[in-house]
Length: 340
Ligand code: ATP
Ligand code: FE
Image (cartoon, protein in one colour):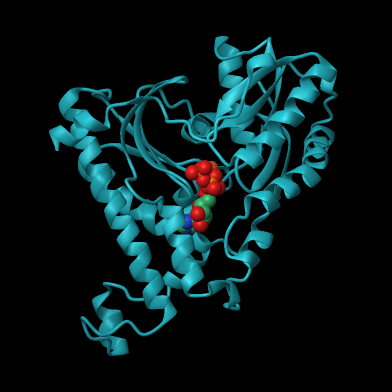
């Protein structure tokens, strides 16, 4: 059984064909990043137009690479929530036309559930596990109890970490920096932070850096921003781990922390989380970096997992709508607050 996955929730047009084992038979991705970097943020109508211009080509490319004809597919899985309304609309409209033309089932996908389960493509991580989703629009801590069952422990109260790093990058005009012109805000910050302030005593002495010295260059600001985001996320994740242990929400032996979403590409943040998981005896698991940011593969994989279990498959699509706002799972954030 083969699934075509389609992603258009934000600014990436992605498609992929996967078989039942998670093998990627063909994939294609068109990123709108360069266009949005120039305008200093995503303009929804522009994103919509670019999805419209590219979706047919991206899907065809994924199919061509896989050597699969539409009639050989079992289902199309498409992101229908959450995301930008205008972007979601293009993927959904295209998918509904496609399934009607080629007569197959439809599997609507929750974008954050897909980020959360991507890791299971490459390793059989058993439920339940703790999952931290850090991306452009979200910061979520949840217990994944099954492919369609999430217990939401906490979420960003103000702004997602990817958005924060993108704003810092924009304020520093990093798109004009010779090393960063094609990088997302988060990637630019990570790159420049490598040459920013450290807590490396020897380096400080060699370079004559004084503690508390006024931050002097973009590298230092990048390093400070990255460290602030990393340490905040690490503290909250540590608290979630202790909460899960106290409530018996994770397995006794070898529980896992799965980290995904675009910001999970960041090596400094991964290393900071490694300190937390080592101290609390959890395994830290992340999908490969290219599957942490948005792509069609993770959507197809979520479709494969649903198809296997016969969950969430829609045969009558007349009532399917996209949902720009859609919480992840059962929200117990109120209780977590009390326990803290
Ligand atoms: P959401 O998944 O919440 O709907 P999104 O789909 O736009 O948001 P993703 O594609 O998952 O987000 O992630 C994009 C974000 O990841 C951007 O904010 C980008 O700056 C950030 N990002 C990408 N690479 C890195 C990195 N190396 N370090 C930090 N942040 C990064
Ligand atoms: Fe995403």
